[in-house]
Image 1: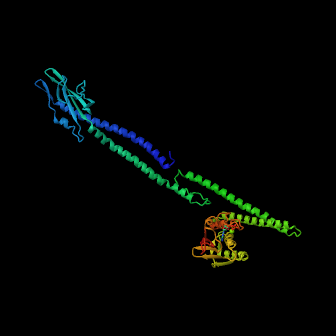
Image 2: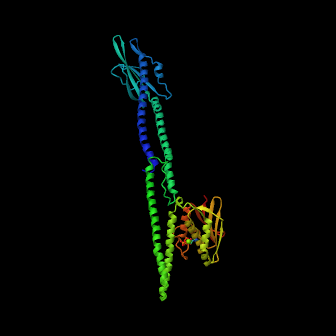
Image 3: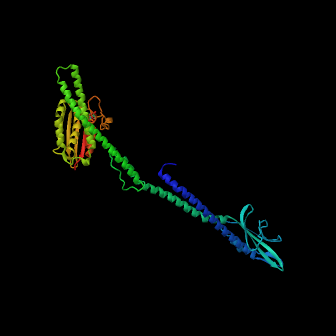
Length: 457
Ligand SMILES: Nc1ncnc2c1ncn2[C@@H]1O[C@H](COP(=O)(O)OP(=O)(O)OP(=O)(O)O)[C@@H](O)[C@H]1O
Ligand SMILES: [Mg+2]
């Protein structure tokens, strides 16, 4: 059987109801038949009695005059055929159809009902005996009346069919109501489904149970417990990465100092000196990676409600970052410009926002060819503060744009980097409930604008 709740419920409803309708329908049919038989037999007997009442002696002979009323009792729109036969026990036929299949009773006055066949038609008949006395002679007169079954069958139909139709209508109504009811009652469950489907993978708040049916609550509560455990697990993992990165920093810094010290040794073989220089480069990139991992873990763990509830000026932060990166820009022959609003206050974490601006501006300087331009804009209106960093470098191909925010994804392999910069930027913006996006400059094939928008509170 299918697994649909609707179909299963319908089976539970339909099968017992169908059996019920069948059983009660059968009982109703038997009842209707019994009633119709009774009415038919009473009419047959009444007719036979009327005819028997008209049998009389005349000059020592028995005669009968069939009263019209005896046949009129059978009048109906169904065109039943009526047969009768009045015969005496000496074999004489007084009236009626000679080959009528008679069946006499032994006792007089008690009618005998039977089914017979006349001219190929099934008939219901009654045999009724009247004793006639005259001059010491006793004669038994047998009056038999029979009729075809059309009006009786019609009566059964009229008694039984409406009842059956009503019951079938009731079953259909029950089925329709069950379907409609289920559609309505399943809505809260579908809401839960939407709630789960629309979720960000890292959104680990419990599902709402208030509006749910008592029967569904345990399921959602179990899911919530699972989400809570998942949350603990994720937090533990983030803590682990943060701790690991933190722990790595000390030995790496130590190594840097040791390498620097070693390289100061004058009488050193040139090859050894080269090897030490290479080790120092590797060590620096390891320090860079460790710092970025730590920052990513911090940004991921940052929660808007727990962010330092302080107001920070994004324009001032941008100004500091530009000053920090001025040397780097100069080295790469990049014209680094700024259009900063006088002040742009938002609620947030200064260290994280500073890292955000740094990563985006550093990318623009690093990936733009020498002689290029990079402009940092911080603009403000009544509701929003927008940071935009525009360059006229190579830009990011459309197919890579959706992936550059993933950790460790790099669009070009010929430059150095960890691939974490934009992933960190995205986490920081999300932690501040802002939005980050990429767009191309005026020239669609060149340049890139990375913008982050925050709501002013
Ligand atoms: N302004 C830009 N112009 C062209 N390409 C860019 C720009 N900014 C980012 N990209 C591309 O997006 C990729 C991802 O950038 P992201 O900052 O995340 O990593 P990264 O710069 O390679 O490494 P990291 O910043 O961690 O040292 C980069 O490798 C680069 O190919
Ligand atoms: Mg970068």
